[in-house]
Every structure is written in structure tokens, then in C-alpha cells.
Image (tube, rainbow, N blue to C red; front, side):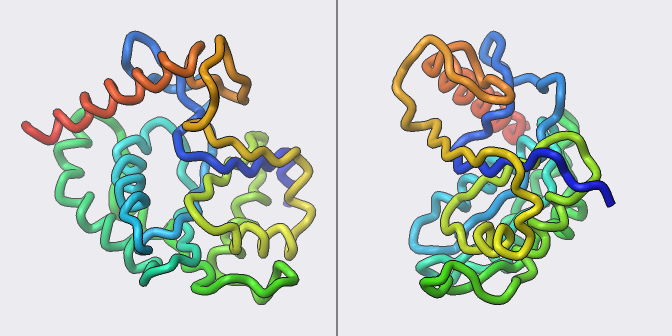
Length: 215
């Protein structure tokens, strides 16, 4: 199996591989591959909200994994499955407007990662989640794999320890919501020409998709 030539780890709180035009998000010329590592189910419901957003936008990227990482609450892969069950109720309406992934396509992507912190050495035994990260990174695909980490890095660290060959691309730590306003920011795919315009486009498109559910 040919090794993936570029694997990019991106810590982000936004979907960065999108382009904005007149307040509506559009597909980039090359569809990005993404894998989510989330501590959903912890003491903060932010990741539940993020998962809801994610499932309404799966027509804009290739989603390859949903890995449950350690949380400070009762987070587990079961919480991801629960969110997919909730999404399933609205899927028929959403599907009429966009080719979002079906619940039965999402479920096989859910993998259980670590349920506790790593020891001080930074690695331990592989998990279903860390093994899945490695498997996705080794796919014979010329596009980089973007790992969006919404919480702890335990499974990503384990994957890099077990398969250092997958990381031959500079790692990036991008917190896009904290970037200062500037004329342009860099990225494999630019979200918009200005940070303010990009944020506004996200909000407008999000409102548009939620309005579909009122039908």
C-alpha cells in the first residue's frame, strides 16, 4: 500500500477547507479529507453542538472518522451514536437540499479512543480510535488528511507513536476563531479573503441550513 505523502494535523474550531461567496459556502475545487477527534459528552456541550453542525455540512468534505477522545465527563463513542440518532430524524429534510451523509454512512466511522489521559511518556496501548487514524492516514490518496481535534490529543499522539511514517507533513496548530483580523490568512484552502467576511459567511450559511428544518 502506498504511503500517504502528506498528512496534516490541524487543531481547529471551524471548517477551514471551504470558500465563501455572497454569504453561501461552496465546495472547494479539491474536496478535503477530514477526521474528527472529539471529547463529546464531557462537562461542556460544545462538541454536541459542533457534531450537529458537522453532520449538516458533510456534503462539503470527505469525512473519514469520528473518534471519541477522553473527556472530563461521561464522554464515549455512545454519545456520538446518540447524536447520529438525533440527526437521523432531520436527515430526510436535509437530504432534499444537500447531499449530506446518511446516518448509516456515519455510524461505521465512529471509533472509541482512549477514555483516560495518557501516561507521562505520551503513549500507551493502541485504541480503536488511534488505529483508525493510522488506517486513514495510510490510505492511497494524494490529498492530505486533516485531523480536527476538539479536545484531547491522546489518540493522535498514540497514532503518531505507533506509525511515525504517516507524519511527513508539517503539523499545524490553527485556532482560527482566535486569529486577528487581517487581509488574508494562509491555508491549503482559504475560507475567505478576510477573517470578518469568512465568519459572516459561516453564520449566514448556517442560518440558511437551519431554515430548511422549518419546512
